Image 1: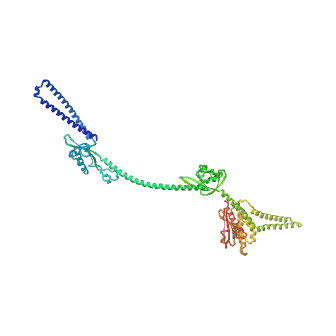
Image 2 (image 1 turned 120 degrees about the horizontal axis):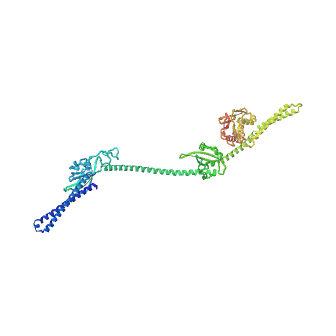
Image 3 (image 1 turned 120 degrees about the vertical axis):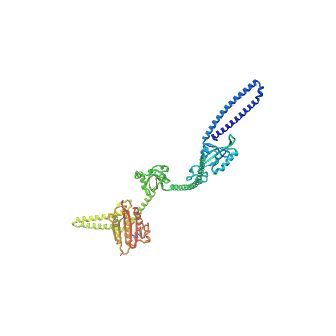
Length: 631
Ligand code: ADP
């Protein structure tokens, strides 16, 4: 209950008590006066002086008492007046609207707040029916409210709209709509009208007339807030529902993704396990380093190759595995050096834990993880391959040696003829010398010339024998810068007798100014001899009248390659044999070994060249091979 309503009740109680006091006093005085009057007259005469004196004293005391009481009453009356004024002021000052109605609902009294609320002056309100200010839609509720108040005599509360319009407000929860136009289900309250809460009770006034006291509170804002809150609540609920749905969906999506991730993770783990197994089972060492050259990982094979365990290498510079001369080659810019080697397979030397050097084949790959670059080197211990290559080289060398001996055997008669010629000349010249000496006056000058010729022929024979010895004796392979044309001429001279004996025309078409080639002379001469010998064999059985011709040609095939061609006018190689002739031990000759071409091919390939041929019955056979020029 508000302070104002409490004060009003207090004033009512005071008024009641004052009225009761006045009534009681009036009755007492009346009774005393009547008693005194009844005693006066007859009795006074019979009364003694003392009694009369006593009675007078009583009257005087009463008189004073009455005057005192009268004073008291006056003061109470003044206090009541002041209290009533206070109450009236408070009544008017109160922000709560108060109305006093009679039993017909007619306004009998109103405070300022009520006048303001009902938009009417206090005076104009008096004697008007409050019902006229109530909105038509709430009229019924209002009359039931008044009826209940009068019948039940206890406090009643009612919320109604007044017929007075508000200024139009924008509903914050419904942007774009005014409250008047809001069609939302939860915006049923139309806030263009002032809404009030009526609290009322019934009592009787001084005149014992029934009066209805009403307190009116403007609850428009409150209602408006309630509407707004419920509007917002509904919106919020809708949003929550929507968001819950969205969350449920995204939750499902997440669950699905988690499942997928789990599956991928499982697959990744499996793959990692497989890769790890492969990584460690690999016979090739796999070393990963960062751009500064620090080792990040190694596999099991690295230990086999270098002798270091993974723990001994992780975090160390990879130079730990590189001999000093190799480190020098790397220079200062390691990353650029590594970058330039990516994608190539190279032969390098590695350094084992025991200090020994191991030949390696290495290939580099580059990759990045999270923006950090790494290089992975796959290293293979090339010792075995090197040993194998050496064995093959030795083997080839042995074979080539045997083949050369065979070749010399085949050319034996020709060579014998070659040696025989100077020997015959020596014999003839020496006979001539003897004759000169036996003469009377020997011509010493002529004798000297003849002896010089003997010397020349002896040297020639010696050279032939020496070259034969060189050709067939076991030797170390070594390469030297060579003029290929001279080498061809030397080889041709060894076959000259055979060529002549078989009535063959051998022609040379050698290009001028060829660059030198770095070759093993004996081996390449062996190839050329082999090809010439095969051509002679292909020509010697041809019918007599058929032209027998061998043409040896040299030219630059490319800027970095010389090509040597040996062509004969033979009947060519049988189509069915073309695939076989370069294979070892294939021969069509009764005394052939079938090793000449296969050894020749191996020698050419060892010199980084290629040996090939083409052949047809019309054009004969051409064998040709390339040699790289000296860089
Ligand atoms: P061999 O001379 O001991 O038979 P080769 O390896 O030198 O061994 O030659 C293999 C075979 O290739 C010869 O037997 C021959 O059939 C064939 N051949 C080689 N050169 C020629 C050629 N210029 N013309 C025809 N056939 C040839």
